Length: 621
Image (cartoon, rainbow, N blue to C red; front, side, top):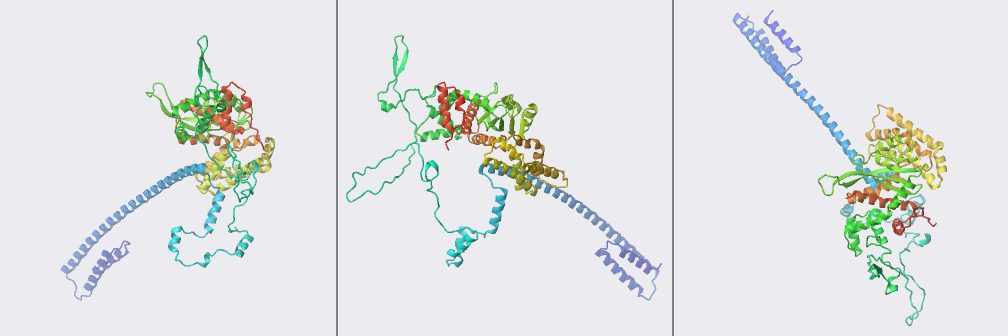
């Protein structure tokens, strides 16, 4: 083969390689030029020249080999970089997943905080929020006061003129709000026995009459006008009795008191109004109890209030007065429990935690340690009875035993949330009917709607709202329990419940659908407790939710934030005893402080007619 053919063959082979580089292209160009130049020579090459060309070709082949080696090295470097990029992409995906999980946890925490705020300050419904957002989007953007001040150039804007009378009339005709300013109406209209709105009541009214027998000359009488002046007299009165000590023939001492000024004494006698063992009257001790267990004023704040009333006392003194009074009120708790657990009754039950200091033998402390214990509330709305229960169990404060021991052989129905203790309680007592709270179901779907933006949750919220609409219908119509049961048994309620159940099962069967954790929790919560959720239809006395118990136990959660803890179990038992009596008084329609004073006075003087005390109040219509 000729040299030119070898070179061209080599050049063609080189041109067919896919990974052509700039160095290779330069090499091929130089080689072709050298070959063409050699071919243009008319003289035939000598053996020495031919050998030189062969040597050059061999050198060029060596150079090409080096270049190919460099290319392989570059390929390996690129592969290494690609592998590193893939690892970085995987790391980015992993970090993105972690960020999404952290964001989900943040949303859950925000959800808990939002629900807490809603319970504390109230919340808007989804429809109201949506309507407010739509209204806000339609309204023109309003500037702040600083922005308006900066934009105002001192000229008069005709577009800001007040509307004319014709404009106002047209707006009214179209159903729009008439922006004409008028005085509020109806403030002086009659409103029952208290008279007009501007007439207030007071505990004591003193009327000072006017003497018109000495009218100045030149004046004549026209009419009388009443001018009210209200003043609060706040102080604590101390009455000191000068008691004579008389000694009989046997040397026994006797107390003797006859007032020197009967008008000043006003019929009062020593110790007739005192709580035995204290210097406080029945009314004053009951005011302390009302402040602490109804108004939820902590003891240290009660000291401040007493100073305002010009009374200074030790905190322990007031607590000792409450303890002495509570000893007389204890028998009422047993009677309340009997009426509460009346056979066939319906009980709303709930529980919450409290921080309790407990002294354990040998713990190395003087007063003990603080433990998280639980308080239960049981409410019988029909009988008007409520009971707060604390049963210290070292390992079972929130377990089944405390509530099981309290209920004993009770036969009836209970309403609660889905806490496992209540389910276990019903399993151990087949005679009990367990009803689950629909409000818990509603709240879970509402959370899924507002937080996770689940469109399917809106349908469940609306359907449950219809169940509550039926309940409101029964309340407004003041239906008897028998009529309430008949209303709940109608086809519209049955169809609503069937639709709720079928829709929830359908959504849970959709494996391809991606629902949020809140939505899945709501669906499972409703399906798992479906039988108990329908039990409220069995009796017209049953409530659709457990809100009566949750409202009753709310003061404990408020007091927990203010007082932080109970210093002794005796103090806890006393607090719950007072709350039981105060709560029962409210359910029966009495003013709590007056009810406490009447009950304490009867107990001190040996009147044990608790049946008459615990009758519903007769409210004049």
